[in-house]
Length: 243
Image 1: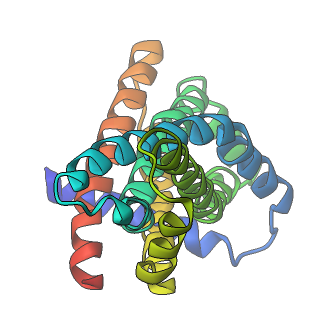
Image 2: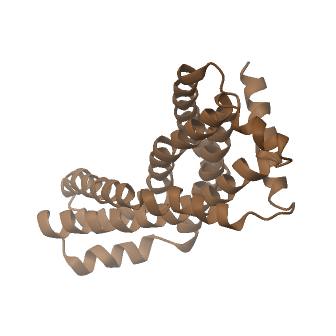
């Protein structure tokens, strides 16, 4: 059963990516989905990133103070955000917000036979519904991850310098010394992969919806759960490859 589901997701991803290179190129739909996934999710990413960085600084700063090493708090928080927490937390938040929306929208179209109507009008549902969401998620999730990282560092700065009284110059010097460009790229690669996972899972679950309103609700729940678990599993393998 798991292998069948995995194979179905791979097929959906290949079909969606292939549709990106077949006319007509639905640029307007890509921008619409980019707005839905990216722009409309900015506030929740700002808020989540701010408090994630703040709590990381609070916990790690107090721990490092036991060893008189609180000066590295900023660097530890930045590394954690860039390499792991930024892409993973962003992926999980977008899976909950946009992945569920994709499954609900496409699932509703399936049970109300709107997808059948597209096929009757000779409109490829994959090109119209899946491809724009894949490319939009592929682009927007890394951008949201960058916003998450920046807000996380800002939150850690507020706590580290403001509450824990870490020297401001030391705080930023340690970040500059220990955080490398490849750390940022590793996080962006993960975020792009998570974006594809969110779009593929949400779209496929929507396409397979059956059973009316109850089926739409079931597909939405499954899309969030599967996307979230897949993100965590993929994060391990991507980290192992980049280690």
